[in-house]
Amino acid sequence: MKKSTVEEIRKRFDNDTERFSNLDRGQLSTIDAKISLELITEASKRIAPKAKNLLDIGCGAGNYSLMMLLKMPHLNCTLVDLSKPMLDKAVERVSQKANGKVEALQGDIRAVELPENHFDIILAGAVLHHLRDDSDWEATFEKLFRLLKPGGCLMISDLITQDTDVVNDYVWEKYGEYLESIDGKEYRQKVLDYIAKEDSPRSMNYQLDLMKQVGFSKVEILHKNLCFGAFGGIK
Ligand SMILES: C[S@@+](CC[C@H](N)C(=O)[O-])C[C@H]1O[C@@H](n2cnc3c(N)ncnc32)[C@H](O)[C@@H]1O
Image (cartoon, rainbow, N blue to C red; front, side, top):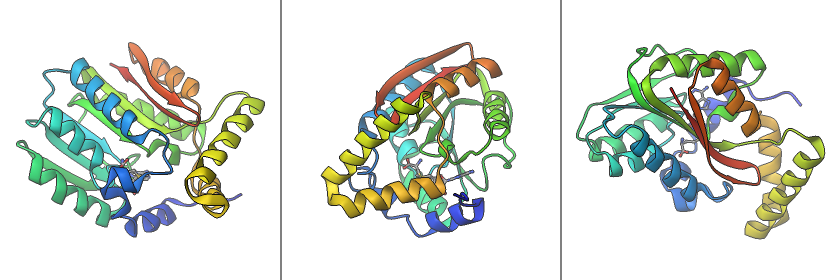
């Protein structure tokens, strides 16, 4: 199937700000969304306790930055998203809680210009699964590594695949059952069709290996439940 273009992804999210403004209601299709959010933000705080600068890529309506600010209210926040309505919502919500500076950049994380060696924490919530081929993944991980200060961390919470086809099929079958248990067969099909059209996730193993390849000194797995995981690396 031909995957969505960046423009199609942007338009889709332009109309979805409300759904992403409430973690409880908005992300039912994401297994353990709240657990992963808590784990990657708390781990970030502990890895970089003197952090000053946070980068939230694919920030959506700002849920990840908001949770980070609950733990570290002094952080300067740089928010990046393709979608202007999402970004506006994130700025509105994050500005109410931030003691530091809030900066917003509309654009593709692959293209936006950001300062290197500057960020203590980079959070990537449900966004990297939009990357496509190997070169796309490699260039993006290399870029994120360059943006981090030594000792800083990249923390990811995302949709993932398995490396072995039979295991992958099994895990996605279980995810289908999960979706059906929340809201029936139609919902299951709707979410799975949407993923097939829009997303191109990679396995946790692939992403951890790539982190090591681009220079991260350590990688960490925080959580995994079927096709969702929370993990990261330290520069
Ligand atoms: C599933 S939402 C997640 C939002 C937020 N991180 C959260 O978990 O609540 C994904 C967001 O990433 C943005 N996005 C997708 N591809 C992107 C890209 N290449 N660069 C920047 N943002 C992107 C979308 O516009 C959308 O707001």
